[in-house]
Image 1 (cartoon, each protein chain N blue to C red):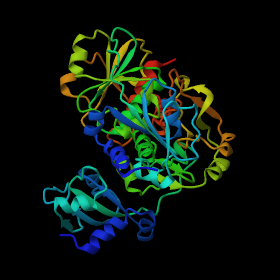
Image 2 (image 1 turned 120 degrees about the horizontal axis):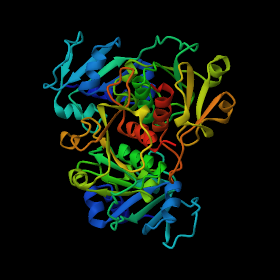
Image 3 (image 1 turned 90 degrees about the vertical axis):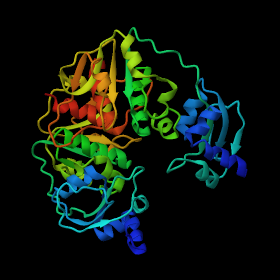
Image 4 (image 1 turned 180 degrees about the horizontal axis):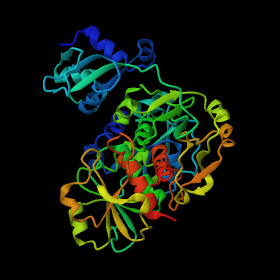
Amino acid sequence: MLSKNELKYIQSLCQKKQRQAEGLFIAEGTKLAEELLKSHFRIRKIYATANWVPPITPKEPVVTITEAELVRISGLQTPNKVLIIAEQSLKIPKPVLTKGLTLLLDGIQDPGNLGTLIRIADWFGINQVIAGEHTAELYNPKVIQSTMGSFIRVQVTYQPLEEVLLTCKLPVYGALLKGENVNKLMPVRDGLLIIGNESKGIRNELLSYITHPVTIPRIGGAESLNAGVAGGIILSRMIGG
Amino acid sequence: MLSKNELKYIQSLCQKKQRQAEGLFIAEGTKLAEELLKSHFRIRKIYATANWVPPITPKEPVVTITEAELVRISGLQTPNKVLIIAEQSLKIPKPVLTKGLTLLLDGIQDPGNLGTLIRIADWFGINQVIAGEHTAELYNPKVIQSTMGSFIRVQVTYQPLEEVLLTCKLPVYGALLKGENVNKLMPVRDGLLIIGNESKGIRNELLSYITHPVTIPRIGGAESLNAGVAGGIILSRMIGG
């Protein structure tokens, strides 16, 4: 049973301001719950319907709620048995920029795109993502859900990208209109890939840092590709193999 | 100025049932409006704020509305000057399955994913998409918006995929766990690519039709890739060049 205050409190965590003040975030659904419970994240509270079977016995008490109550606190179109409130991870190690691959996001504003890009990084074994200004907030529930759990494995830090690029000596890849055909790319062991904003692309201020412009050849009439899709296509070639 | 009835009518078109009964759909924003006005689609009505500058003089009268009214009829988080009601295109030519590339969607349920896949097809010059059962409806406003106008150039038909596959003699590509490494794919001039459902993948019933299973090598911890991203990566290699 959910008290009125509890309901209000959970709903308040849908606002960034409140999430940051509390240092908490919401994750939903059986799959994400399973990953979270097995992760290093600290769980604050678990709300679940009676038919939820925890994958491991959680240390935290489970508040059993009705389907109707879950619908009221859920941000999903199809609520899925469980909603978890967990603590934001504040001790994220500083990214290592001397080797390996790192994804730089220059203002990815759509939460779904940010989540998808974190999931892509995770798929390709890239565990560092640096989000520049105007990038959506990691703990936005839509970001968390669309990572499908990858936010647990990928370290996402927020930093001005100019600072990162100024000091980093690795090759810098970026999708530009006139670059090397992505199909000709050789696998890259160490480097950065910049993905630009959904409508404006990579900011002019960053262009001079790009040592390896890459182009996905266009044949038809679409003006652009979705940021996540473009990122996936380029990373797939950078990983190669 | 918007009458109460008009407001209700526009809002009713957010429901599939009503859209189908009326044979209409909604498209929003300056970019989409421009593409629609220049296309073969028949426009029924244009609602725009006073600051909208039509790219060409529309034959249809423009109803000038206030920002506040646009917010009330818009499905976008950030309404963008114009909302168009247009007629669904019912005379879509039957797909040609003797040559070229065709995208088959086996139950893509998320409207955003469907729109993204249509946009990818358009980018790569593929103008035929066949949507199987349980695929989202093309004229869902979220699909239309996320195609970014590509629905105008790509012919999307709805057909049971078994029927299509039974008669088609082209090679059939599909993303499976054990297939050829996508990086080793040679460009494909004629063929079909099946993209499976977001959580269940390609249905068992279709597996025996796949002549060329393809795998995107996984290195990290993510269990899967977003359907649009996977489609983009595979198509990018099938197109090659």
